[in-house]
Length: 398
Image 1 (cartoon, helix red, strand yellow):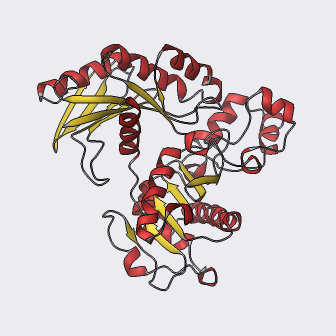
Image 2 (image 1 turned 180 degrees about the vertical axis):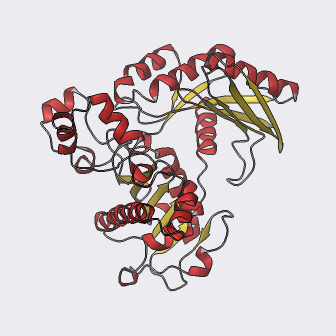
C-alpha cells in the first residue's frame, strides 16, 4: 500500500499523519502525531499508531529534532517513512499570496517564494517554511508538495476579493481578500453534491468551518465566490480568540487614546478577543456549561457569536441568489448541536428547517440534519484537511 505523509508545522508544534490517500474520508490514518512545546524545557511527542498511543516527554529544541525523534519512534514500530511506501509529502502552507493558486511541487525556488510571502502571514509562514526545510532534508528522495490554505479562494470575483482602498496602495502591498481554511471548504463542499444527488456545477452552497478559527464561504458550482476571512485570518466571524470583523477605527482609537502599541493591539485582537475575550473561555463545551449556570458574560459571548454567524449566512444567501445546501464542519460545527440550531433558527420563511432529532444525533460521518420538506438542505460533514492534502500531494507527484 502506498501512503502520503502530511505535515503541518506551527511555530512550536508539528502535526503529522501517515495515511492512504485513496481511503474513505472517515478512515483512520495509519499514524497521527503531534509534537508540542518545541523550544521549551520539556516537549511532548504524542503519536497514535494503529490505535496504540505512544507519548514521550523530553527536550525538543527545534523542529528538526522533533521530526527526527518522531520518525525514530515510528521506525521502532515499523511504520517510519522509510519502512512503508511513501509516495509524497504534503505540507500545509497557510498563505500563498497572489503567487500560488494551486498545489506546487516544492523546490528551492518555491521555498524562497513562500519565504517572500512571510509579511502577509508572519505568524504562520515562517513555521511552514521551517517544516518544509527540515522534512526535505530528512526525506530528500520523496516529492514534497505545498498545499495552500488560500488556494481555493484565489479566483474569487474582484468584487469579493478587493477592498475599497486606494488601488495603487493595495497593489503595491498585496492587499486583498485571500481567505483561509480553503482546503477544508473545498473538501467539504465536494462531499455535498452526492448527498443532494446533483451535479456539482449545479449546486449553490454555504460552508461553515467552525472551530477555534472560524470562516464561511459561498460556493457556486464548485467555485468560491466569497469568504469571510480576509487578507489575514482575523477577519469575519467571531472566533475562539480572534475578534472577527470590527470597525478599523477601533485600532486607531486604541493606539491614540488607550496608548496601546501596534504589537499589543495585534495580540489583543488575535489572542485575547473573540469568545475567550468576552467570556474567559474558548471551549464551547465549557461555554455551554457556563451559560447553563447562568453566567451572563458567557451568554453575551454566545449571542454575539451567533449573531455574526447569522449575518454571514444571510449575506451569502443574497450573494448566491438561491442556496441548495448549508453545511457545518470542524470542531464546533460538527459537535455543537446548539450552535447549529441557533444559527438557523427562525429561517423557515427562507426554506430552512432543522430536524431537532437528527441534529441531536452524535457526530458519525456526513449526515443531513434538515427536515425532509426543507427546501434548503442542511448537512454536517466532517472535514478532513489531511486527507485532502494527501490526495493533492499524491496526484501532483505522479
